[in-house]
Amino acid sequence: MQPNSIFTYVKSMKNRKKKPSNRRGMQLMTLCISITMVLVLLGLVVLSVLTSRNLSTWVKENLTVTVMLSDDASTNDAKRLCRNLYHRPYSKNIDYVSKDRALKEQTEAMGSDPSEFLGTNPFVATLELQLKADYANRDSLKWIVKELKKQTYVIDVAYQEDLMDRVNINLGRINILLLVLAALLTFVSFALINNTVRLSVYSRRFLIHTEKLVGASWGFIRRPFVSQAMSVGILAALLAVIVLGFCVYGLYRFEPHIMTVITWRELTITGVSVLLFGIIITAICSWISVNRFLRMTAGDLYKI
Image (cartoon, rainbow, N blue to C red; front, side, top):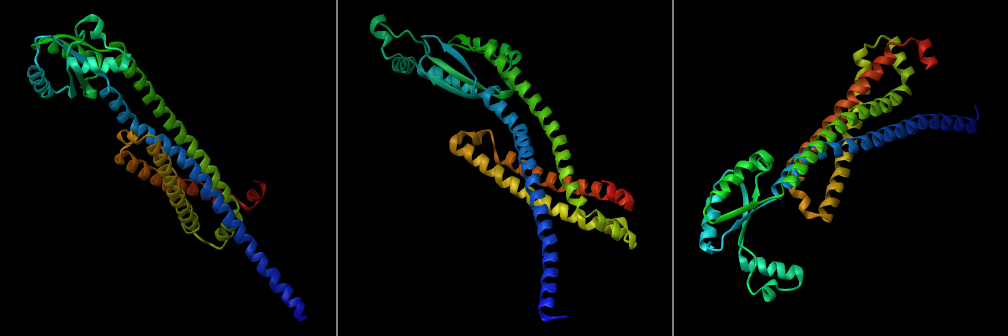
């Protein structure tokens, strides 16, 4: 054989080795990207479900019950009443608004002083009471209002009953919707990742058959496929966690108070859930796909 022929032969053999390797690398990259996108969507739903309770609590605790005080109540009387109410189990926060403060705030809001043409301050001193989330409902408010009206110097109690009912109803609907969406997305995610992993195993179906012919056990054949799929799942999960982290950071830059709803606890649970889901789902899908090809005969492999 001539030297030029030998060189050409060696070069062609190297190219043949490189092509399957490059193709395999592209398949793994595509598999990783596909799983990452699915895990990002799943992570968003998990985070939404986890934070829905915090959101519900935050909304309920920002609803205000206005306790109106009589004109005989001095500042000391109002502060004494505040201290008494702070010890009640339903109190989250109490803000005392004096008559002068109420007049000042309304003057700034309306652009004119009502006391100038009325000759007196038309406003009364009030306590702005914010309830704990568990008490922000119609049944609890009934006995809370009765108790407040029994207090000395309290002439009336006002709150938006319809608003509280609408908030509770809408938050309940949102929670149900998020749970249904999470269940559907989990099913869809499993189907998408399963198809992606199956395509990856499909390209090596003849290698599986060859190993089976030489007497390798099913467990021995499955092991490298499952290990590789789990490695890809871990990498995809880490990438998904990074993407979710950037999304939360973007929300924080836009609205810093979002961290009162999305806490580190929810972020940690979401990250761990995405990681576990990435590992478990890829392992299961790889196991199922390899078993499918292990059951096939040589003739069946050519037909699919």
